[in-house]
Length: 297
Image 1: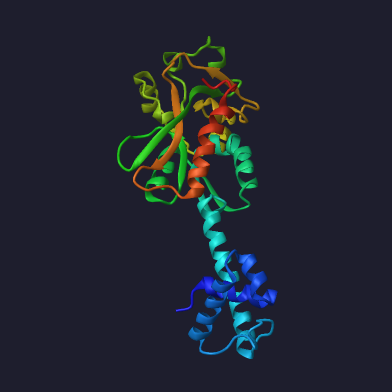
Image 2 (image 1 turned 30 degrees about the vertical axis):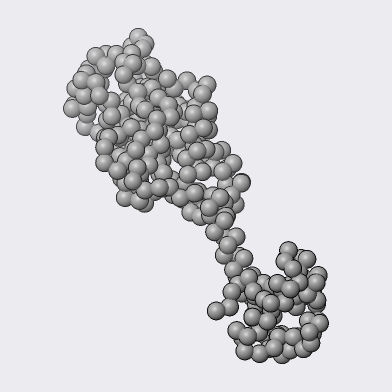
């Protein structure tokens, strides 16, 4: 069997034209190089050099040089690819995130992440927290960023920050005349538009309001449009309201428990790829830093 290292020795000698300089180049003794070439010729079944000086190739040697260079290039490229993958410079990354993080927090983080890894392919899905969990659980996403959901199973949740809910309503709504912060009992008789995020609020008085709601909207853009149209008010995490306040009023809620815990969602039973592990480390550090200073808690 021809060893790759023997092939590399032959190509080096053939390109340099003598054993001594080739031996110095590859860090071996001249006698070791000579023995390697002799073994290679025995394995191939014919002479590769015209003379013992090793400065001229036979027809077999020229063919061996062409094929050897090709094999070494292919091997070196494959090893480079493996090393790039192992050092999170190559691969694919699928991220599932709640929209508020995907639109206002992730863009600059992903920009820096990809600047250092131009060969990494990234897919970003924005969806509600339960869908994020399902994508990670099924393996469709490598990592998720979402609100804390049901515990257990194959999913592990690592908290990043807490995000207070706030009330969003039309400027002509009767809610605008209420004192702030607004209590749930102040909203009796008003029209609540439910959404996937606010359905996680576990307060009995808020649950009473949801039972009377006739509208549930899961897409934030559509939700804002309905509030602007005067069909009712809604309750959203503060981060979701960063760029959604034009033409609307936002009020604080008295209920301190009306908040969500946002964190990283990942499989506990499957080790992450090098790229996913690198993104997770950056997300743990930079998402919390990006949130610091925002009025969300």
